[in-house]
Every structure is written in C-alpha cells, then in structure tokens.
Length: 586
Image (tube, rainbow, N blue to C red; front, top):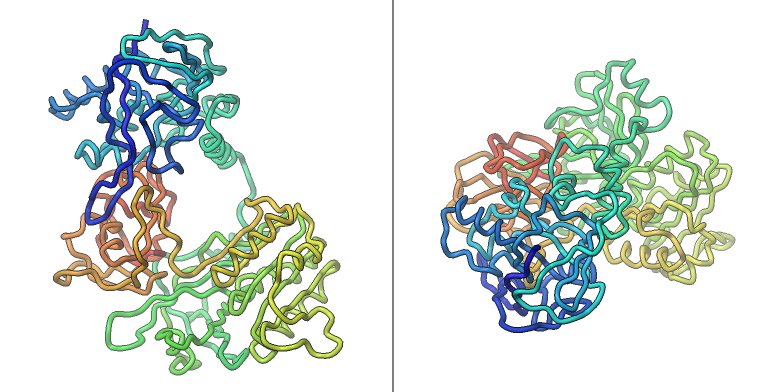
C-alpha cells in the first residue's frame, strides 16, 4: 500500500530573484501531527500565484519519495528534503506512470481525485537552485500531480493511501504530461484525455486545441486563394526582408497617409490574409535601421500592398514616413504576418475600430465586399471628427456592396451632419452596443487603443458574445505574463545597461529597440528584460511555449534545446540567442 510520508505546508512569501521579487508559496516544510485538508488547501498552506496553482482543481500537490531518490542521484545532491519540490504530500508509491487522471484515493479522513500533472513552472527551479528543473521534470517523466479534495478531513504522515476508484480511460499522469508538452503525440491518448471529466478545464482546453490542430482542414484563406497562388508560383511569404518600391503616397486625413508599395523587381507578391501587417525597416537617421509594423489597409493586388500610417506627435518613424518618404524610394519589407485575420465562415461579423485602428478591419471589409459576402456585417468606428475620419467614403462605399450591412459611426468631438442617421456624437457604450442588434453568435474583430478594446470587449461579452469570438489586435508591446513576479512601475523600453555588445543586432519590433547582442545575456528573453520590454514566460526552459515569439527576420540557436520546437517562423526566446541579425515581434 502507498503511504503518506510527509505533509508539507508554507504560506506565500516574497523571495528576491534576479533583481525582482517573486510572491510564491513554493517554500514548504514538513509539519507534525494531523492537518485538516479543506476544499482549497491544507491548513497552514497557501499559493502565491492562483492563476497557475491552487484553487479547487489544484488544491494539493503530490510528489513521490522515489522521485526524490532519482533526483538525488541525477543531480548529485544530498540536500533534497521533503517539501522542496513544492509538494503538500510526499508519498511512498503513486508513481506518475501508474497514477491516472481521475483516480480517487482515500488518505486519513479525506478523499481526493487526481486532476492534472504539475504545471511547468520556473519556481521549482528557483526553489532548488536548478534553473532547468521545469524542463527536467517533463523530460524525465516525473512531474508529480494535483488533487482535488472530494471529502474534507484530517491527514497525517503515516496514513495509508487507498485507491477507491480508477479513473476512466486510465491515462497516466506521465502520459498526460507528455501529451501536452512533448512532440509525437499519440492520437489515441489524445482522444482518451478528452473523455476524462476529472481533468482540469485548462488542460481540457489545451487538449481540444491539440485535437483540432490534428484535424484535416483547408489551407488558410478564402476559396481559390491558395490554389491560385500555387498555380502562379507564388510563395506564401519570404524570409527576412525584401526590397519594395514606394509607388505612391495618398493623404487620407491631415494626419493619415496611405503608402502603396510595389514589387521592386516586378515579381508577383504573395497573398496576405485580411488583417495581417507588414514590418518595415527604415534608415530614419544615422543610427541603426528602425523596424515598425503597419497593418495592410486593403486587399493586396498581385503587384501592390497598401499600408496606412498615422503621424504621431512624437513618432520618429511615422514622422519620417510622412515627411521624408517619396514615390520611387526603396524600403525593406518583411512578408505579411499576423494572426488577427478574418476567418471564412457563415457567422455574422462585427468590425469595430477607433482612429487608425480602422486599418486591419478595413482590409477585412474590402475582402467581404469583393466576395459580396452574404453574412450580416456591422461596421462600427469611432473618430475625433469628420476631418479626422480616415476612409469614411471608402468604407461607406464598400458597405453598399454587401447585401446585409450595418454602419454606425461615433464622433467624439463633433455633432453629426444633418441627415446622417448612422453617425452619433460621443463614444460607444454598453447600451449602445446592445441597441445595435449584433447577434450573440457573431465574430467580432476589434482594433484601437487598448482601453477602447478593453471597454468594447466587455460590452460585447455582457451582450452575450463568447470570449473566444472576440478578436483583438495590438501593435504596442503585448501585456506581460510574468507569473508570480511582483508588479513594478512601468518603464519605457530602453537600451540595456552595461557595455554595448559586439554581437548581431537584435531588434524588438513592437518596442522600437535595436541593440547589439552581448553574451552577458543568457537568452533573448534575458536581453528583453534588461531593456524593460514587457515579456511573456512561465517555465523559462523551453517547455511551456508561453514565450513563443514571431521571428520576423534572422537566425537563432537554442542554448537549451526545447522539448518541442515551435512552428516555423517562431522562436522560444527563453532559451535562444541570435546567430545573425534578428528582428523579433516583441
């Protein structure tokens, strides 16, 4: 019979780490005598990051004494004491390759259900002083697992552990962990995972996405697009940057101009999906070239792309485009990219924008109009006034080509002209969105200032739209994901401190920072953090893929081989460094 060897608890505390403060409950120590186990945790225990740990589904973490013995040998350490892997229960038996998701166990007075493997998290490596520990736990199939508390009660070291019910599908903890984090997934095991009610909702969603990715599906794009591209010999994109020629520049408003870009060598341009963007590399001054990204604002032709750029008051690049770029100039362009794209389908569509945020959804409107798409379409735009309402006539004309179109415009600083019943003064509100009659099964595409998208997204969710059908685009740095790290005041991205490196140039396109690589940095993620660029990560060892970033141009090498490579054109910045000049969508 398996046995509970130690009950370990610890309340969250602030721990200094790499110049930051991490609020974590990973420091746990054994306790004597019985402890009450409740719905959310063991008495005297807590979790610092409830987004990744704790809660009903992850109330108790289990790790095995046999795994302790394994790691003592593997790591050559004799200081690994119970609780150091962050577990609440250290047990004899219950190996990860034998325990199954959905198994139920009685320990002392309490009953538990296995819900998922341990979350890959940098904090176990932080606790042990082994930075790659999160990766090692997965690679060596020794993650440990979480329990849900079915019946509250007291437990203590020495209690026997009795299996009361075997989980459906008998998918082991080790197999479930490998199914999520390792390549060469077994389709049969993936189907099993989707049939286990006890599996935590987060892991269920991940497995649904993996299953959907395995299904045969049409290539991206609308009917005929990809076939015609193959017939014409076009490639879906190009590596790095290619030179294009400015064909013409057309003022749209006093502060917005559209730039038409032609193929410099006359070859056909690859298609772009409506909503995607281009990255431009411009020699704005005598310093290193600057990279900025701008949405395509119309459906490309075989020879021409169109972007539209607003001149910002302190924008070095937008100012250069407006004042110094002329027809005939040559510009380095990276191929169209981005996942904020109009999907083919039959559901109603809501295109919602503010200011220059109209550009990607305008490209979507162009595509819908060109196809005379029968879906109901709502075009909702907010501008300062008529003079600054870019694409007003263009969008209105496109909407007249659709059989079921609805146009609603808001001017924040000007009354609508007489007779323009589709224009209101002010900003869109929750009641206004309800009154628009957007069906709750619609797909909504939002682009504009972050606060605008947050507000409108909330209105649409309150109206009844599902969160996964509300798509947003943001060109500034994405919100940081740094689990457990205590927030500090935001700092504008800057050059890294210390001596300037002499390695390949690294450009963070969203943040507008270019800096030479220095081996003083452990990874591209480490360099980004030194520049105070918002970053997204969890394991920091190439397991979880939270840090996956589009590689606009250049080449990298992995300092720690990831357990599974990201898709082509992407890079895990937590465990990579540049081997040539690189441009990252970060």
